[in-house]
Length: 163
Image (cartoon, rainbow, N blue to C red; front, top):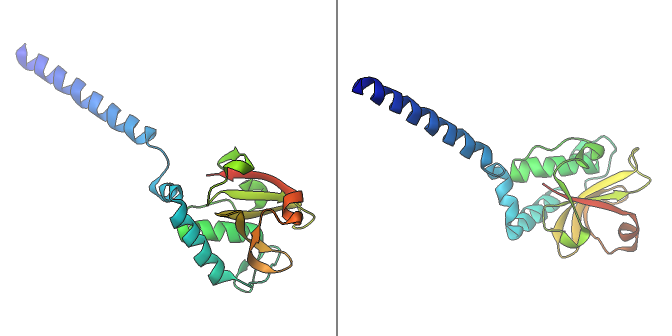
């Protein structure tokens, strides 16, 4: 009888341990690749390096290479290459990831969206890099850093999202 009781107790212990392990894994926040987005200085430096690497690459709707890139491809590549985070390819799909935040809450690494007349879907996306600046593939100037308070961008600001 004591042996059966010990086996029963051990099975319960193992099951509870497994359950606790599963719950701990599920409860952990985002994967480690997302955790680096918490450090604004690291994110800003990575974005500056990416902008330097791609600076002047011309805008090309549907493009995804150094010969021409569009805004959503630039954002997708930047997150994958600098933070190991896979994002959707299209701007429309990128507007539904993460959570919506107020413009006043922006931190480096947040996505900024604008309603424009370019790109077929009338949306443009960039990545906030701090100090009221964002990096993006501009339709007129290629990959650059722009100011959010530029009259054009201020007028066309649509939303911001945090991963």
